[in-house]
Length: 181
Image (cartoon, rainbow, N blue to C red; front, side, top):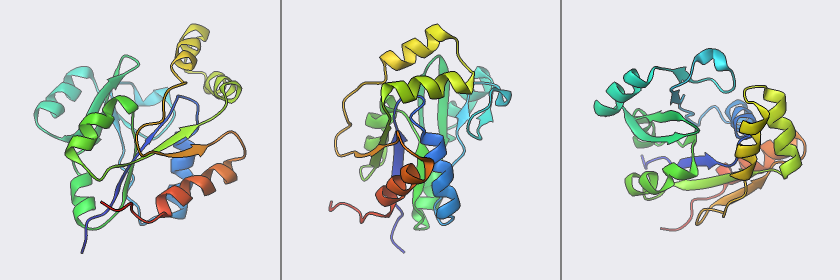
């Protein structure tokens, strides 16, 4: 069996990455969606993730349990190395990533596909305020970082409309044939 494809989903906070991933998870149970490990309490809400202390994260990183890891917004994020088994078994894998992690991820996984999820600034501001995890100055800082160049070769999903439209556009990216090597 040929290997599966690996998709990194990136984009500014509030663009709706988790919502689109949840929609794809419901529509495509054949895809593996690894649970991120993050150095924040699980009670912080948002996506399903495993919350760990900084010391535990460092221990796991040193033990090689992460395929991909990065730091952003004062937190550490890791994607479990178990994705390698899913890829080897021919399953596609989709993870919520970060543009900061793309260079290292592409070195380890040369066939990595990137999906950039974006939304208009006003939509981002409303979504960030609604989730209630950050103060106004933190939201302003996230919005200031929201406008950046599209990563090389990325597919783009404009997610400023309905959830159904966003999920459909996201699934189209995941269902597209692999680009020639």
